[in-house]
Image (cartoon, rainbow, N blue to C red):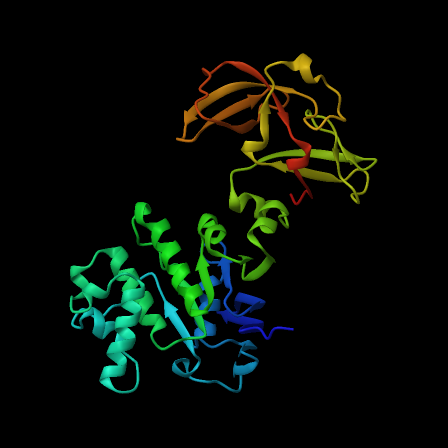
Length: 359
């Protein structure tokens, strides 16, 4: 069994009696990227700060390569934890050159420090800027200098707190990919904090979804997206539609036909949750018919409320006849029916999630 590079056990942090981080446990394998994903205020950054050693937990422990670095009694100082840090603010020293920034904090002879700085700047494509100053660089270039500086002491773990949020959207994807490639080359384990699902899906080997100070689900991006733990987990990754139904004989009846609800007692309410891309427009009702055993189920009629072209797809919102509620559908390419147009919709059963109703 591979020894985890980082292991966090039952971390708790309270502020004014409230648990901001509540019994958080996670592991990161050598060379892997784990993303702490969740909304603002859910405890992500506080967890990161405790691992870094700049904040103290109220209970729990932190281990690096099987060695205890911090609990409520014993504490190794932050600079001796072999942990690198990258934040939203690159925090480069304006009075030091790019090379001096990267070498800052390295120990040893000046020639060795310069060689390490040169090696890393070459790796991130900025070797020719070694004698320039941070204000002479673009935001993306400054981010790469910050990465080189964080990697210079050869940390075993890199903690990254939304490091790409200040970058222009046009540059962000390229910088993310370059950063990930360098981290993988160095064999550095990464814990990335973000509130952006797309960033987590793009970068992470594993996602830990946080809410209210707790990790509510962990897994590979594919599994988190396609097997969400609850309705809120589905909604965090995309727009959703939701129908309420009552269960009878392990089936929940809806205007789109019955949906399986195994294990839910008769009379209990459930939410059937589905994403806009899994709503179909049935232009030929006779071709499918109302057979509830078919994958698409029973068509239900809605009237177009609005339609917008989003670039690669169109978003159409319908006001449904059966309850006056709204359902969103996304359609590839350009599809802009006029408001007031009646259309029949279907929902794919294999793309729906059924959860016990919580309200």
